[in-house]
Structures are given as structure tokens and as C-alpha cells.
Image 1: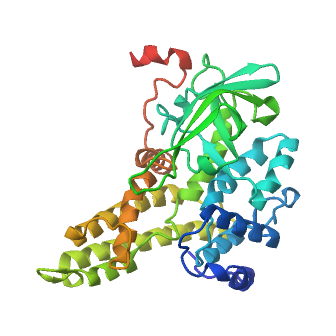
Image 2 (image 1 turned 120 degrees about the vertical axis):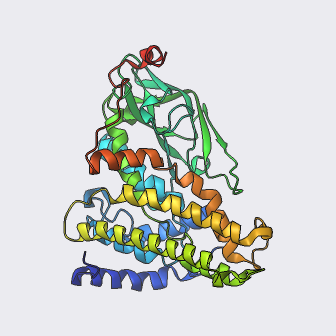
Image 3 (image 1 turned 135 degrees about the vertical axis):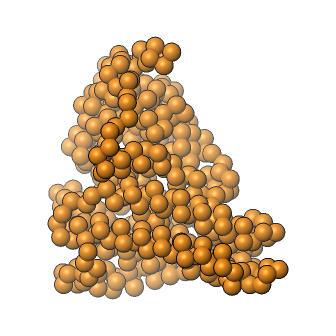
Length: 406
């Protein structure tokens, strides 16, 4: 691996640093209070006006037509500031690439610029109560009615739906076809009649996920993505981008530094926590995993920098990252003992509060973007070449699967 920027990459990094020093000056410190959505929209507008949205997208679509490495460099430097980017991660990272890959040209022209500018927020409507890791098992249906389709069903775990203006939804349009072949994807207006969004209260106190119900929602055929019955192929475009988006460690996630500072602040009957061998061993384990994740990420970056196609690193990193973050939060709670969960004022043990929030959130991270089990299957079958799972339902019509299950 080569850890050094090429001369062109170094020049681009210097250019980004100079721009961020001025443009992101108000975001050097963490945000406290205020309207996070409004701030996210404001920052997105600043980036768009400066030409830093859709860096790798074709120039004909309003992007820069730049290299993946330039996008990575921008992301690396932007992550050094406390800028609010999460509102657009799904829309610009997953939904819009699916739209301009599979959508009608007039639809692409309608939606691309407002999304890039930050005027419109998007969500991804995939998972259902009975279809999570097995996405092809969805039951939300779309039935043809002239030039429209009528959608009925339910989605769940939809991130950001309560803030979204539009979404991409995968539906079942042919129940007589095998489950992977009877799917079709559409663009939906989240404000249309018949769409109800119900935020899900999470144990960490926030409501990032939602249930979304569709009752006789009408969508014009012009808003179909891909061919009728080709929804699985279109979904793979979205999932490919999702794997990349959630493959690495979040920039704001805690690590060794927070664990060391927390251990320094905790005194036990045996003395300061940092002086205890089992605590130091755990911190060492986290450091090793953290470095492994960083170096694995560098394999992807090195491949991109040299013009090669990255391998399965995203799936490998995702499996390790989610489990490591959960273990870190759990260990922090064990060290704190009677301190309990931090609520309200976090000045006493700020690092504990951050690690505990990570613990409460990390269970969702082990599901989002592919569960641990799904990713291990990908690694086993596509990387190690092991035999695949038996799939007796693969060629059975969806409306006859209950016979197989019985």
C-alpha cells in the first residue's frame, strides 16, 4: 500500500483545506442546540455553490467528473470539521445515483439539481417487517392502473423519512414470479396523500428510524426506475452504494483516545482504572482493531488511487467496526459501574456519555447496510470461495412460497 498522496492528490488536498478553512470556519466546534436540519441545508448549499457536491458524478449531470480519490480526499478533510452532513448521506450517497443510473432523462433533470443543492431530502424505502436481510421477500405491492401505479404496504427502519421530501421504494409488481424477479422500484413524493410516517423512538433517545405506511398511493409510470420486474437489479445499484457509505468507521465515532481519557477519570477500589492490566489490555485490543480498520480502508484508497477496482474491504470493515463499537461502549459502562447512563449535563464524564451513546446506537449499526450474518456470507462465498447457502425458494413463484415453508 502507498500512504502518500500523488502530487496531483496533494495539490487537491491543499485546495480543499484552503477552502474549508474559510467556508467551514463556523463548524470547528461541535454543534449545541439549534435547528440541525436548517444547518445541514445551509452547509449543503455552501458546498453546492462551491462545486463540491457530486464530485465523481459526470459533468453532464452537474458533477465535477473527478476521480474517486478526490471524493475521498474531500471527505477526509471535511470530517475534520463538525459539519452536519448526515441529512444528505442517504439521498446523495444512495438514492440519487440510483435515479440517474436507472431513471428517465426528464426525471433525472427534475430531481438531480434540487437534491445536490440541498433543497430536497431523500430516503430509501427498502426494509419491511418481514423482509430485512432477505430484501427480496418484500410484500409492499404496486398494481398498474393506466399510466399510474397504486402502492399499498409498509416499510420500516427508514432513516430520515420524517425529514424527507422524496424517496425510492422497491415494490412487488408480479407475485406470480420468483421473489427476485417480480420487483419494481419507483420514486415517491413523501408528502403525497396516503403516505404516513411514524418515527420510532430509540433507546438512545432519538428517532432516526421510521415506519412508513402506503395506502393507495398513486405514482406515475414516468417515476419508475428501471424496467418493470427489474427492481432487484436496480436495488443492487443502491445497495452497492450503501455498502460503501456504511463500510468504514464513522468520523465522529469514539476510539482509543476517549477510552484512555475515561479510564483516567475513573477511580476504583484497586486504584485508577488506567493502571489496571485488564483495562490496558482492552484499550490495546481496541487500538489494534482501530488500526486494522484504518489500514483496510487504506487498501481501498490505494486501489482507487492507482486506478484499480477495490475488493471486498467494505464488507470486512463493516463486520469489524460495528462489533468493536458495541464492545467499546459495553466496556465503558462496566468501567463506570455506579455512574449509570449519563443524562442531561455531561460535563462530569463527557467521554463516558459519548461511549454510551455509541453503545446504544451500535446495535442498529450491526443491522444497517447488511447484517453481520449477511456480510459474513458475502465474505465466505465471494472472497473465500466457500459453497453458498442452499436456497430452495430461489425459483419458486412468490405467491407459492408458503407451500415451501409449510
